[in-house]
Length: 365
Image 1 (cartoon, one colour):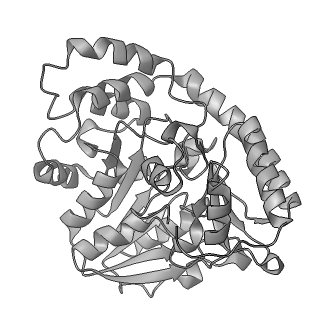
Image 2 (image 1 turned 180 degrees about the vertical axis):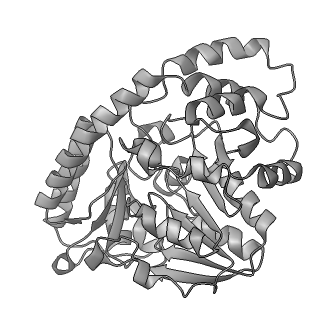
């Protein structure tokens, strides 16, 4: 199984399973911006040699100031972490809820973090017939949960949450953690984000990732926004120097690259619709998405399952996410990143060939 450690993009495991070197894969299993890092990242790498002998700023002051300026929020409302994963884990550890609600499907690290504090997890169903949108009627009764963890947009479905639904939860006295790791890919980010609400709200937390949009997953970088009292407590419990100096420098540099952001949004608006049409023409069900990945469903009549399809593609040098591993999805669900046109065309062609053939049996690789 390619997701033996719970994530896509694990090229080392792929090499171990199939013998293909890590640099020889076409990877649709990790949702990175295919434009690659901004050009400014290279200049940071060249300059960092002068700084490698120094400790990083333990308060991450330069990057926090840049974030504050970009989103027009107080510096005191920002906590920077070693990737969004540290922010998820740190907030759950800080709040220590006895009960929590997560959507199903959802990013698996929500539930992993909740289990570490022995929280009782309730799953809020997202349904295919509703295109996997979160519906207010499916939420638990008010007052029954200590915490809601919600993807906005959700992973692996790619759908944002209606603002009124989130505001209603907050007005009812609920504590809400919104994971906005992929909201940068939305042209309407300014209107959709809850960052400015979270910056002063005592029961709202927003988590952001910088690794997906700026294609810097090797440099772990994310941040959280909430009321300054919460942020002070989160920074106090954080491991010293969690965010290394190179990550801080890169974060400061890329946040101001408006040209890169504009190019990304123009590329995605065109490519997502083209890719979705092409995938549907192969016979796959392709659900609507508001970000840089798509949730797919193999046709039942084909006999193909997600694990079989993943292995068939992997033998041909293509990685795709087995979405049946997400709680709430079934064995015919796949998730694919949206990459550049030439690469997307390779996946479409491979899936067309696969669906025209008989399913290949066999157990785990």
